[in-house]
Image (cartoon, rainbow, N blue to C red):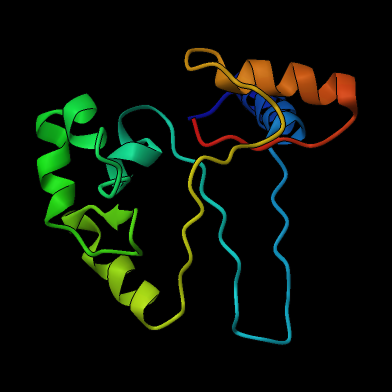
Length: 133
């Protein structure tokens, strides 16, 4: 059985949690087209997913990691997709996906405290910032 004190403390924590939870907005569009922007960093960085296999120095710098990319789908004379991105390669071939290499958000964020750093800088600049982890 739930006593009054437990009920009130649990209810208060629930209300406070809801007040500080991130807000989510769902956009409605009159079309099925969507724009998805993904910034990759860390182990799945740009050179790991989309390699500059057309650069003569690429294989020397990336070592064994370059071998996987050499077997991937060629995007143009310079870049190729990693073979594990076969579904994305299919979308690219259909004109449904586009890859832009070496771009990032205007807010420089570090690896360890990404969310905290982004939030602080966004608050100073009075902009909204969303991070993926």
